[in-house]
Structures are given as C-alpha cells and as structure tokens.
Length: 228
Image 1 (cartoon, rainbow, N blue to C red):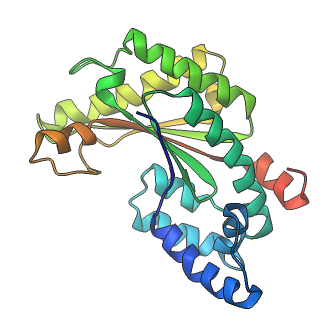
Image 2 (tube, rainbow, N blue to C red; image 1 turned 90 degrees about the vertical axis):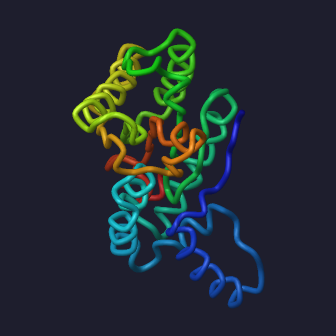
C-alpha cells in the first residue's frame, strides 16, 4: 500500500523547535518548504552532520547529513516535494517519505527478491523501472541504495547478501538509463534493524532495501543562486 508522509525524524524534532520560535514571531503557520529553510538556518551543516551521525548513517541519516539549510534548503525541499509526489503516485509497493531536504524510499526485500536471492523478481523490475523514470527526470541528485537483512542466519551470509541486493537495484536502475555515477551502494546485514527481530513481523520489516535521494553539488549551487 502507498504510504507518503513527512518523516518525524530527529531532524524534524529540531525543525519544530526552530519553527515554533519563528511562528511566534511571525504570528502564523509555516509551509513545509518554509520549515525546510528554518531547519538549517545559520548552522544547517553542523546540525545535519551531528544528526546524521546519531542516526547511524542510515538512508535518513545520509539525507540529513547532506542538508544545506537556509533559503537554499527551502528551495531544495520544494523541488523534492514535487519529485516525492510523483514517486508516491507511481510506486505501488514502496514507502515514500520526505525527510529533511531529501526523499527516502523503502522496499520490503520480499517484494524485490526471493529468499536468499539477490536477483530482482519480474514484478520488482516493473517497480524499479518506474523509479528509474522519475530519477531520470530529476538528474541533479545523488542516490544511496542500502541493503538490510534480519538477524537470522550468520553474518557471513547476510553481509554479502545485503551488499548484492543493493548492487542489484543499482545495476537495474543503470540499465534503465539512470547514470551509475549518481549511485552509491552499501550493505548493512542486520546492523540497522527498524523493528523487533524476535517476531516474524519485525524480521519482515528488517529485510528491506532503502534508497536515499538528496541534492548533488550542482543542485545545491543552483539553490544557493536561487535558480531552482
């Protein structure tokens, strides 16, 4: 089922602190784009870097760590809003989240791969093809692809499997015309669970591929010039 929401990450909590102060001064609410600017005003790089490390270098942490903040960050956020809406519309089997100045996409690995396999299933290729079409429309972003497993099996199996699954997604996106130089892959085995590995449901959530989309240097410079 489609799920499109603003992630209430650590960064969002920090943003709320800034936003509440700004709102009290201005006597009104703020748009999502305006909040993006407040998040990093004055010290976006410092805050983003700290929160990124706290987040454990997950996809969300990578997005937060790459944030520029200020007016440029607000422009990037608005640009990402449009892209996220298209992804939410087109991806039937993924969770799409707006995080800070980027987008995080989560696929349950069962949708993409058979058990203990890193070969994309046929229905998964359709989904990744849809993702590729949107990524090609917005070329000025970096793409981080992460593979994650549950804690069943040993690390000697899970680590390379998580790496191969991330690489498999990247390779298929590349075959669909997405520039491979935009993409970085990483496997984390079971190091970054998002749910309880002691339950069947939790292990299913932990077996996943996460994709982080965030501004590259070209987009950041365009945002700083006000050209986005």
